[in-house]
Length: 123
Image 1 (cartoon, helix red, strand yellow):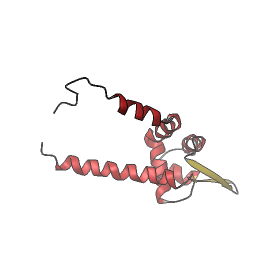
Image 2: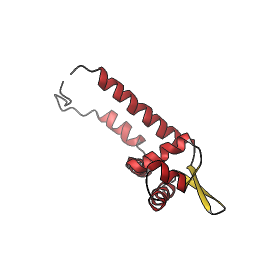
Image 3: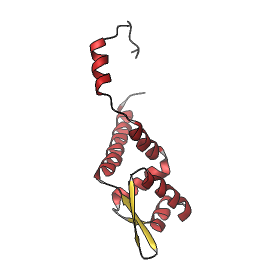
Image 4: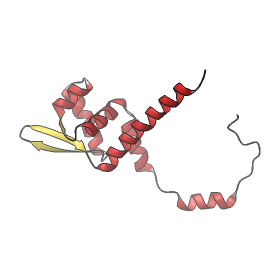
């Protein structure tokens, strides 16, 4: 099956309706760009399992130095995906809100479904 239109016919009413309802998605693109990095996504996913983690524990989970983990955590925090709190000499991170939790868990579920579907397709 070809994914191209066989004819060129623009539906002006549809185009106008969509254009009138389009939002500025710059911040959404930034959010997805932040999560597109596998290390940052692993950090976010870890924070769906354990609500709050110190930088040292996150570094151990992702197999990196604390400096690398801190860099990625700062990146997530600057984009509103994570938040931090200092407790004594340690800094603890968590996801910024339930929306980030939902994005990460829904994306993971979707990817798992895609893997299952691909296994069901005969070669």
